Amino acid sequence: MKYTFYCATIRRAGWWLSLLLAGRGWVGLGLLGLLAGTGRVQAQTLSLAASAYDHNLLVRADGTLWAWGINSYYQLGDGTQQTRLQPVQVGTATNWASVSASEKESLGLRTDGTLWAWGQHATLPSTTLTPLQVLGPGPLPVVLTAFTATAAGPAAVRLAWATASESNSARFQVERSPDGLSFDQIGTVAAAGSSSAPRQYAWLDATLPAGATGAYYRLRQVDQDGTAAYSPVRHLALAGSGGAARLRIFPNPAPGAATLAGAPAGAVLHVLDARGRLVASALADAAGTALLPAGLAPGVYAVRAAGGTVARWLVE
Image 1 (cartoon, rainbow, N blue to C red):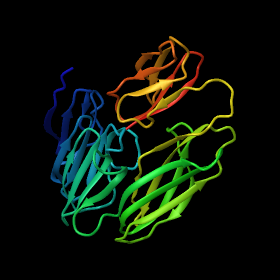
Image 2: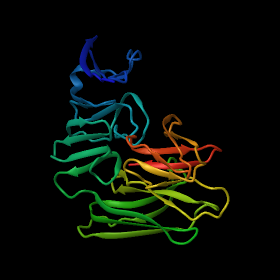
Image 3: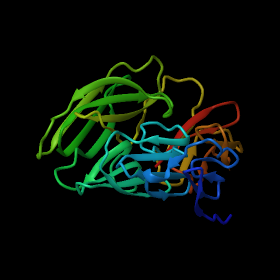
């Protein structure tokens, strides 16, 4: 399918309506057919805008930043994954100078020369929900260099992470999930505040639910000004306590294709996204193994086999 992008502005009754039409049918300040009355920007306040595959950014003349569109990868920067049909203000800063957008990530330059990023990054070590300084005067808030999860017994997990430097960091919130989709905070570790030396951190999770065979973990790094960023997700499978055979995926997380084992011979495997939509399928061989396809967007998927057995697959 070929996607074509169009940009236009229409002035009506003293207002500018910015139309940014992409292949999915998104139109600037609302959805196609829902534009009337949704998100109007006064002509004298419009400074500049940027548009990506399915989200848009706008800097007003007063230096504030606004965003709208699809938000699956936190690319709007408002701290949620909620799709926005109308522009929402990103943070409270009033010194934005320019913006740039890609499919999963957004960048902004402030008048003080600092560069900020938010969304899912190709090179940074984490997904950031709100703008995070990545270049410019002064050190970066936190440079995470490692994050691991290892078994510390039959019902405990040891988390360890390291930073190369920190600036105005407040704390690390440890979060756990049984499925990689819904996370709960299980602990807090104080950060160094400001440090130019490498730092090591650890947390022991000894509160796993009874019968748990694995868990997903992530860190929520919070700065002293309240800005937060998430680490990559780590998954650890624990030794089971017997019972029915379970599906196993390796590597998990995976940057591309992965292998599944433990399925019934010849079973059809369905790969579902976080919304429950079928996005791929595979066929198990006589040994109960199957190759899960590459090319899926980063995220958490459910792989379902006959009999209702389900495995969680994390694609990076």
